[in-house]
Length: 149
Image (cartoon, rainbow, N blue to C red; front, side, top):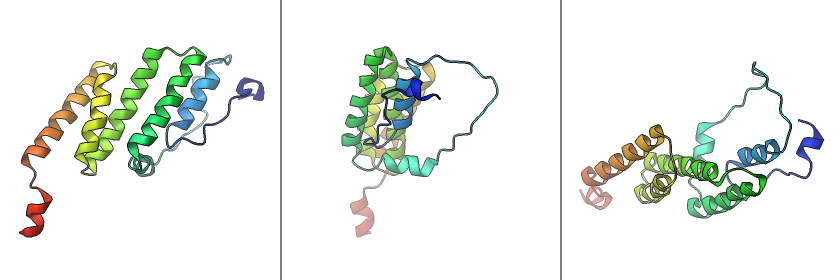
């Protein structure tokens, strides 16, 4: 990537997650592109580290990230595409909280994901997690009962 293409764009260091996607979306929205069909780079993502970032102050961090995401509309990126991304990230946060047993937070982020536009496979994922949340709440034994037993 040339310095000219990056220009005044700076990496959003204050965000908890998805900062690389926001950076590259902004840069690539104005850059001239060439297509290369062979991989030239491998990007390693630590799932555990990525998931951990979703558990610290999730609502506050999501709102900060969401504001930065919607700022990409100034770059000519369609608001509908930004809403799709918002829904995908909310679904990922819901999945992490569900897996870690924080069902209330999972439900709140699932509601955000369900409200966003989706492709059919994401609609199915939202429905599946909604069902899993309902089943887990219905059939789980409250912690208070477990401790007193």
